[in-house]
Length: 71
Image: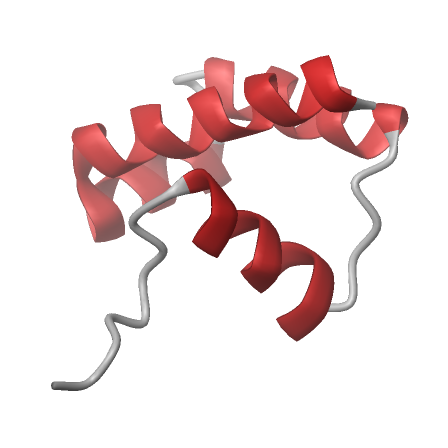
């Protein structure tokens, strides 16, 4: 069975961000993303919710908050 493309856990999400996308989870990057994801009036956040749903949006926001605790 093929692995889902959308991360289902923090570990999968972190791997996707750091390894597959080559991004660093720096404190400033994490804070920018948290701020953006918490702003329901921001265009990109609205598009994210439209494409992936409110549940996944909340998961990703929680994963960024978890990452913040680890840096």
